[in-house]
Image (tube, rainbow, N blue to C red):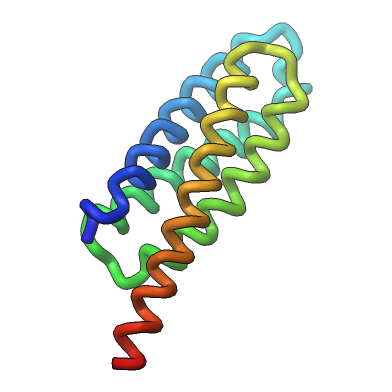
Length: 120
């Protein structure tokens, strides 16, 4: 099953890497306090992305739900990062948007697959 969602797994791992980098880089910014929400969302996003990738890789029946939540967290993180000027924030915002799109597609595909199995 995880092969079917490999592009989503890859997007989740790339997003988690970008979020970890962004959080670390934000801590080096002159006004760290202003970056507080960005850092917090980076940490949340990296965590849910790693979890989603692990659930997909193991073929968990809960992967669809986790990916739906991951898309929401990625969207929030991407919106926050886009508000900031540093390149690491802009790169993180892009990774978050890509991951949110992949997770939404995965959740829709998984939902359609689950529905067809139940109907059969």
